[in-house]
Amino acid sequence: MAAAAVAGLLGGCGSGGSSSASAAPPSPAPASASTTPSSSPQGSLAGKVIVLDPGHNGGNAKHPEIINKRVYVLTGYKPCNTTGTATDDGYPEHAFNWDVANRLAKILRAKGAKVVLTRNSDNGVGPCVDERARIANRAHANATLSIHADGAPPKDHGFHVIEPAVINNYNDKVVPVSRRLGLDIRDAFHQGTGIPYADYVGKNGLNIRSDLGGLNLAKVPAVFIECGNMRNPGDAAKMKSPQGRQQMADALSQGFVTFLS
Image (spheres, rainbow, N blue to C red):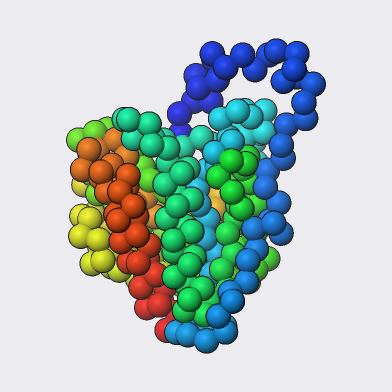
């Protein structure tokens, strides 16, 4: 989830040319475009609404004027969105998040759930972090998961689940349920993938944060997962592997089944 500085990424892109200045930049992806109902009315998740939030977006780096906009997240102001991280050989986090989310959505829909994604492609911009939370709130989600990968130093490895802190009584009713969701996602991911708990942050694969808009503003059960460290060779190998990403999606689906059953 760690994001490279946008200015550094764009320093050599020639974004000040007259042709780019005359073209209107894309807006963050609208929520309605990404809502896709389940085609299966029966299954272990029938009647449940699940929101999947694939972190970042493929077009973010080209539009700092959009993603650097500040949005209020109750504990302060954060950038609308960020570019995300990447493996050392260039596999981007936004692509990893998008692939795992779509694999997971397919499994959940087959189980009867209605699945909503917060973005509908991997070449758009945004949406902003506050809007991602609102998408889940408007959907009255039974559970929502933001999918990410970390960009920590190469020696660090493992996954962790991020749970919300209580923010000014705004989310005090949903935080205990979010923590139960976090435990179920953590246990299923660990058991289904064999990836260890992160050895550099949190404790036993869990971390509580109060600075993430997607959690602070959620009025429905919500957690993040950092599926591993993209800068660690072992973690990166699993993330770059289609088989590894499918294994992650399978494991995450079991976490939802446990939580919602």
